[in-house]
Length: 158
Image (tube, rainbow, N blue to C red):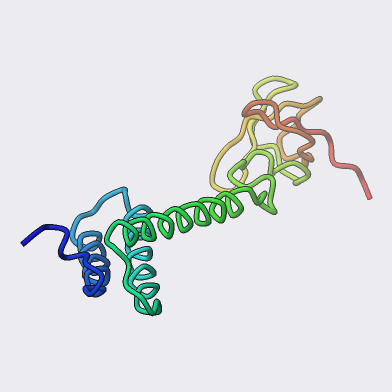
């Protein structure tokens, strides 16, 4: 039996068997090739369906060419779709930038190490603060972040 007889024009089920084998191999073996393997599964299924709908048989070379075209189209469209998803900017520009989230908040000075330097408790941690005339217990507003130091000013009276 020739190895190419599996893909003869009368054996369309071979494409569905290939899809099942590829899907099973993806489930059994943890790998990083998942997008390529899943694209091959989808291309195998589409090739089998395409051949079922054709009123005439195709040679195994043409069947393989149809499979490659389907696979290429799936990979191309999947890559463009993922690039589109990743290109979206997050709505919150300070996401994962905790210090920048603190700009504008009111904090209370806990410790003063010098007239212009001190510590303030923010949430469950202490931050180094810098500002003019720091006094323990004074409420200050964070105006910017310089490295890991919060720059503060006296809170405006309203």
